[in-house]
Image (cartoon, rainbow, N blue to C red; front, side):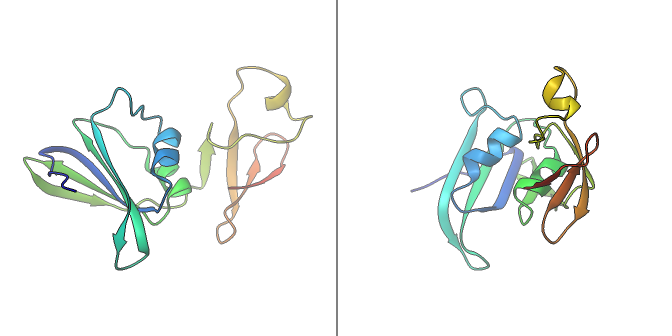
Length: 139
């Protein structure tokens, strides 16, 4: 199989194997309307296998969301056929509208239109707590 290089866009590399579609969903990237290439379950010297996402054209990537769903991923920014910048996401201190509170009495569950906001409590366990009711959520 041959996937050609891109001249303008981004490459999300080292995505955990088999999770590329989930990552696209969390990043709010619609594969039906975006020019992209998915390379799934390819060989990785570091992880054994991995997914790669190549997105052609101008695209903003939320590194906080990427740090939550694919912490080991790297983002290469490509201009003129060359990688001009390499970005590494970190586990975010705060996330909004990525995790949903499971507490049935939380204001975000009862009221419509309130943003789901969580803050990091324990980085090793990826443990977050709701800003409103302090309910624990592991991602």
